Amino acid sequence: MSASTIESVADTQRVRLLRPSWAELDYGAIAANLAVAREQVGQATKIYFVCKGDGFGFGAAKVARLAAQAGVDGFCVGSPEEGVAIRNAGIDREILLFAATLPEDAAQVAALGLTVTIQSHESLRAFIDAGVAVDAFIEIDPGFGRFGFLPSQWQTAFEALRDQSTVRLKGVYTHLSSPESDDVTRRQAGVFDAALADARAAGFDNVTAMLASSRVMLAHPHLAYQAVDPGRFLYGALDADWMARASLRPMLRAVRGRIIHVQEHPAGSVLGIGYAEPIRLERGVRIGVVPIGFWDGLNHVPPLGRALVHGQAARILGRRSFQHTVIDITEIAQARTGSVVTLLGQDGDQSITIDEMAETLRLPVMELIPRLVRSLPHVGVKATDLPGNNRCACRPPN
Ligand SMILES: *Cc1c(COP(=O)(O)O)cnc(C)c1O
Image (cartoon, rainbow, N blue to C red; front, top):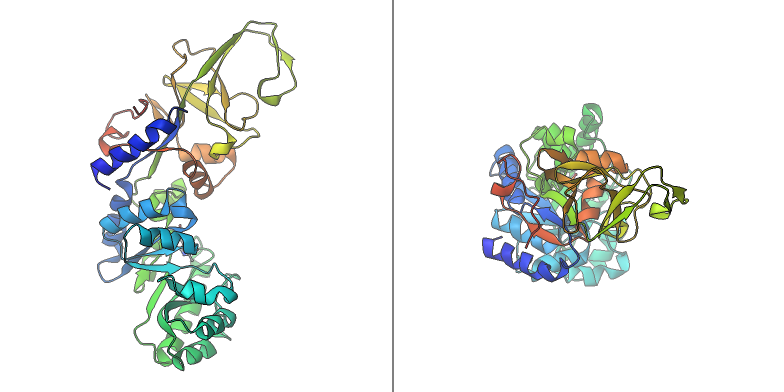
């Protein structure tokens, strides 16, 4: 995305930021992470960028545009709508639709100009009978127990594909259950290799074989085949122990809001802060209200963790509301209406990492990031403003 596009994104958000809460994104992260992936797999292996979940919540068309500019070979999507959104953004690279649709809708799906997944004899029959020419990948179940042809099934599928001309077989892919285990990965990759051998024996010599999602790429780089299909790798959205395996840049850099309201309560006040049973305060408190709530992907019920204000930690009080979070700013004298509150990211010398937040909220990083970015307004931050360059990105965007 060009600098002017980023500015116009920020521009369109300015009205929305009249409610001052936002997610800060490093729009250069996808290109940087794609370069790391390219370095690893080389030029001969294709990289299909997984844009399911509306591009992990960042916006499928937006991330696809960034990845296309950075030279990605194709995309994988989790719904026909995501594929159409990427096409409508003017991107004509291959888009593989993961299994997502009913057999009875095969004709309509085949007409979208996407590469479809055939994950069973039922879906194979439906696409053949639909009579609409379509490119397809066959999915193999390596022992995952979800989608794909089992060892007893794929031979007849390859034969059926050979004997017709509606469905053009372009590739064979699978998805592994346990990249953290060498033993399971070796066994499941062995199942995939057997399917590939049978595909080639059936005459499909040039099929693209694809198996490696992000953690497979990081832990088993030799399993790159002709294509890889990373998602989290390119968003920089893995847990810390996986992020540490490569030099990846997180796309989500911060989640912040500004205090829109301050209240002071003397000792002795009786308050039910955050839907709690009202209690009598033993000491005076000053609270700040930030317009970010569980609607914005955070949780309602504690533990809610902490926030940073003027480089100092502030407790989050009670339960989080639909649209608001209440923090204790009693000890932070400078805090006032307009002060920036950091829920994720760097503020001065302090920072709240995505791993701290995920642990506090008891959510995996891959679940937390899409929750946060799919509803909050996005603001682009320049790499030069990011921590690591000793600059704090905690100024309000305006
Ligand atoms: C989600 C998914 C991926 C990408 O997974 P990451 O861990 O984000 O890389 C790849 N392939 C399939 C089939 C998937 O469902």
